[in-house]
Image (cartoon, rainbow, N blue to C red; front, side, top):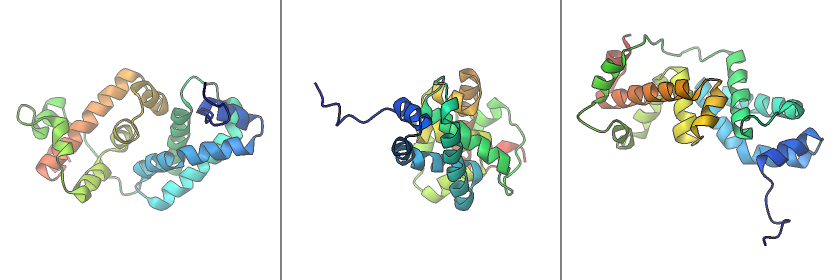
Length: 196
């Protein structure tokens, strides 16, 4: 039987203790999730400074709202949702590229359906700068779902909860985001696949 003193508390325990005023529990929660929340905030804003601000706003809101956490979603999904709201309040990036919706068929063709595995095309991209640029050029809703599912490895249910959409809507958005990313990496630009 493992020593209970050595077992780390789970997120639900930490948020419950935080709601009761335990600052050490809150500090543990911050240390555990600050990097992931920062990455999501950075993906949402495209700015290191704005991501830092959103990180602080997120944890401040979590501290103030700990007693309101209902446990319907994981704590990390709840934190991501707070970060999304903070980013929304600040406004999306000023330099965001406007995107016209492209049909799934056009995205599929641009991504190389029938030629190369769509997901393998992104994995095979050797130029990290090009990949980072491709992520920056994605519409914000597509970029955030990619970060949550593929980088932060949230489950489908957790990502959907953090995004405030159904699992089906999250899957659709993720599919479109992966196609946009693969198409950009394959063609070296987005003008042919976004309609802009």
